[in-house]
Image (cartoon, rainbow, N blue to C red):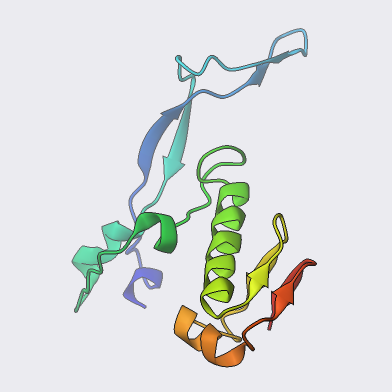
Length: 136
């Protein structure tokens, strides 16, 4: 709450990134990935730790617990985040004794299950998922 009141805000960090641009002729010029030509300003939640009355740090497997969306494409993009969620859903459903057809988009709402164990209690072993589905 204190971060949203008064002048207490998170600082900006500068990241140097390669970004495409329009030439004076109006043509798109692709960025050289080896030569950053733009500044991206970012804020990080860890900068709020000094403001915390109590802080808790949890160590976790990044591939399972942290899938940020920072880029439009490539690493840390909506595509990689969505793929991680689908992979985790398939693992949970498989651990419940169910099957998921290859390339089937399956998502699990946190209202349905917040863990693999909860998912196991809610599904009937032997259930086959062959079409895209959201378990809610």
